[in-house]
Length: 446
Image (cartoon, rainbow, N blue to C red; front, side, top):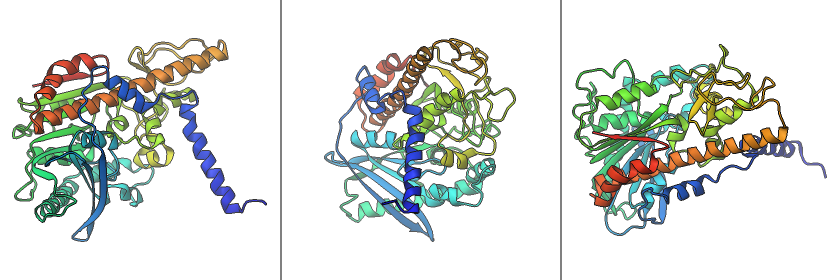
């Protein structure tokens, strides 16, 4: 029997999606989770590994839905709390690569996102090709920040009421030991709650946090030099970013994020810096195979042979920034590539990035490819080229997995040191960690 036309269409779509996903792993990808575990075992920070249960709810606030997801470990006693704020267009299920290990280490992890800034953002009339800069200006604006602060603080009040009311689902949460963590847009909100000086009406009294983790924080270059902007941030703080951490709207740059670090007052401040980690990697949202491919996809897709010499989607070797005009965040959702990123050849052994396409030369600082022929890896024996590509892809994926393992270890140790007063975590973070991740990251403190 011939399948119905609709069934045929669905089958074709599924096969096309499977084929697209397989493009990046046709040579046999690195097992990300296994590589992370093995690398952590070579000197990383590993605490307990509790089983974790989860809840996901929507709480209406003045007609505005606020999504709240909670990971709760089976650890005994009262649980310290980590409040996680996701990035632009992310729902509370994102960031699991960071959130779940924190929960397994004994933290109740509460993820909060007003739905208007989560996946619903892509249904907004503004979120169409070519408008990602306008969307970026809107969601990072003063008005939007004030709105999110109100919604997040309201959600935390509701959480506290549930704890006080003896709701068994929340009874184990210890809101007296609470850390704040945020990525991208969430880090903008977290920075204000941590003490950034802004001319906004904050809810009173604001929630009290013991420490903060800022991952790829919002850092507008035009505002970073305001005197005393961060002087009131006295709590322990960990900032995580890197030299290729370019956001899709090009509002924050690696240089502006580094400037933010420089302006933070001394005392319990830590920086984890990756020269080669893009914005998508730092999201910790790689449960979907397409997300994992976005971390390495801009590199592997370079083998398509596009050049960057003045063409759209060119790579800026000076800043590490890339662009995809006309695509942006919306294009990232529909195309499976990270917004703001295009193909740029990465030499995993030399740690260098090269301009795409062309002769396989060294215009961006990377090593030349073997062979000629006017395309990446051109000329020579096809089997040799295939093996060279396979080895390169393995090295790229291994490097990315190890960077993720570093984020997990460092953030977990920072939380243990700050919320549990763990001497073991303090010693590892201050002494052992730099030797473990020295080939992949840089750590600073002040």
